[in-house]
Image (cartoon, rainbow, N blue to C red; front, side, top):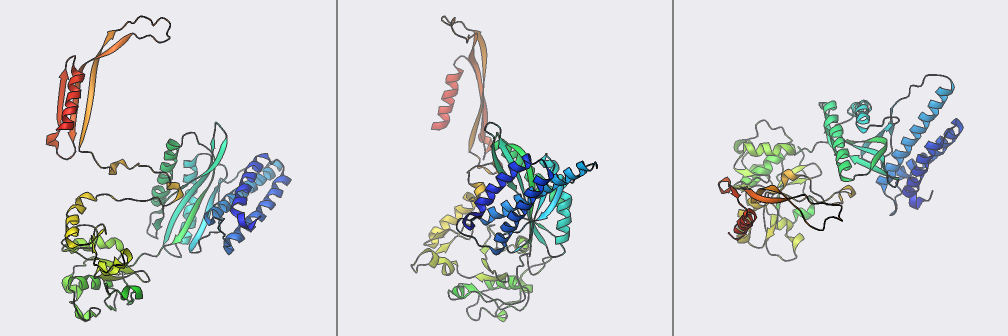
Length: 479
């Protein structure tokens, strides 16, 4: 293989192996291909392990190709085993699934493995059967740490009209598993339901593709360390932040840096703002009942509900506290001046910038900021999410429950009577008009999305009902 195109060469090898499996008849032929495939897998594993990636290589593609080659190796072994049993006159009882570890291009990953499909045709049946192998491996890995897991279903699909064959994958998002997780319910929610929905969506979107074979279910297992909102060790802010004098970092010697950051914002001081002794104790001014520390990020909204005078998240309150986390140990500090912290990233000028705490837009004056703030909460009720992978490169909208409602909608219905119709010159035509629709009644319902008192229903009967309806529409446009 050429080291500059290992991923491409392995992709071509997959096509050859896929065709060969259908043609192999004897045990010797199968054994020879098993030996060749083992050598190719060994080379690919070594290439991933030493991570000699060039600009032409895609590490994820290498990992995917290694998974497929291991899948076909298992299929060849199963085929040879079937021939052995059949030749010996023994009843054949083969396994439908097998687990195989796969070398990953991600050094921080605990384990990557594939559940190889050997005989199952139905994807839903395969996913249900794969749960046993999945649960055994997950329970084993939970002894090391909490886990973050996602799965990828891989299969070959074919276009019947031109016999084009293509590999399709369907991935789930990473989700947390700990010792208290109901693994069966987790699997149903994050694997069965999610992948079944994606398969159905694919069938509706890309009509014509038919599933030829299910290859494997790839399982990516990562260690999960919860983001802890504070630690007992004081952490210095990076030098490039400290020199801006935009952040107040209280020197705490406990696990309550989050609370000290809040107190420093509520009771600002001019001198020695880094000392704990410069502020009232957080237990005297803050309510943190039932919250465990170091605080978790998902407990911040709970803390806000206990302390309603200020805001930490996007909910509009009278006073806003902006915090920054030092990633090294997730240590909280208070951002005293957003302008001092971010202005140089926006412009080389020394003028102060005024930031909206909700959307982070910036303005040149406080007057402009106040004008913006009065509308920000009402207008910015949705957010933009840009594509994060090649699978999302096509622009589409499918979450219709989130779409903005139009102010007015008109629902109209027309009733007609059928009149006999005859026209000269239709003798040579294959289509003969027997009756025509003559409208005699029309009704519409005007629905207002923001004020139902503006909604109304109107009905009109008469030969000029179409003219009446058009005039009604014109009145709506001009009013």
